[in-house]
Length: 465
Ligand SMILES: Cc1cc2nc3c(=O)[nH]c(=O)nc-3n(C[C@H](O)[C@H](O)[C@H](O)COP(=O)(O)OP(=O)(O)OC[C@H]3O[C@@H](n4cnc5c(N)ncnc54)[C@H](O)[C@@H]3O)c2cc1C
Image (cartoon, rainbow, N blue to C red; front, top):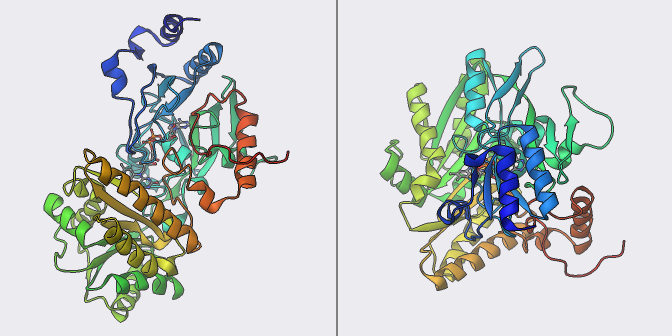
């Protein structure tokens, strides 16, 4: 069937204006936060599960690959249409469908921004825990596909710990429901399998999540250090002392300077690193929790510990942390966000080595990270117009991921594999592991149409079946 017939089919399903096919429009969907670009044949805006199913069925009839896209904030090339085909834009499926307070559940469409679910729950005194720093622009569907984390995931767990069920359009266009409101469902955990599958097993069109009551109170502390080692050693010390703050975030000096220059949060400019720590729980307990953590920070070298005096100061500190990636954009035309994880006791070691990698490749690498999870985000600054520099960035990124793997960590904390880390998968998985995952993909998607080219590195050795 001709190209034209395909576009006509798509327009019949969703309406003429909901299919983009001009060169200019398509150019806008050929990239995301990673460095690679590939142009789709069409972009389709969908508004219901039925429309998604019919679009996917049309892709099957025409043998065209498809890539679901939410906010496009992923940093690993997950939404780049590597093999062409159709980008299915989920952003108009953005309704909260149900808030079931007695059962502590909420159901929403996948194009809803993460923050919007929070905004719908807050007046009722409830919240949804996973809170990526991108929550204003990242969708629930993207969070599910990437198994997103966020500052509060240190204490409460990442997306996979909060999603109970999904409605999914499978790669052949059939609609299935996985999981449900009950605490457990018999059989294989297909919800668990889908979370983190990066759009390779189909498209989720409804998300059922756990919600929790908002904590009675919170206290936010800023611990200020003259040495990055002391800051990172404090992270392990807090956990080893049996304390579990709600968040434990860290920024180094370059990031602090960038944040201050753009957001004016009142951060000290002369320190080496900062820990942003939040404790939550019963109001009566907060003072003592904060005091104990403050003492521990001082015992491990903090030169000062500030406690946010009111909600406005707390909001300002969080604006700084959540705006850190954006602020760093002031420092260079581009940057690559690395996303590796190490056991938190290895943080001082890995930070030292990241500085060595920066020196080796003559690059600047500021760091901002979810320190409590041992999840680091070295931001490798560069100029995308400089091909030599870009090549050095890719080498430095791979070297940092190799370090994480060698230190007993892994190659992603929360941003997934996408196109960026295909080869890095081999650092943490054997060929047999990868082959087993390819077989799962093939069971769901024998025609390899759902976000092909992502997550699974090319075959190296044929494994025995
Ligand atoms: C400034 C900034 C800060 C960030 N901070 C964090 C952070 O703290 N924690 C964190 O985890 N991430 C963070 N990220 C990364 C990113 O925001 C997350 O990965 C987020 O979950 C992506 O959501 P999205 O809606 O933008 O998804 P997209 O980028 O649109 O898509 C991501 C992947 O999900 C797939 N997908 C999208 N929708 C669906 C669907 N409905 N069904 C199936 N697959 C789908 C896509 O095909 C793609 O593979 C940050 C990014 C930025 C730019």
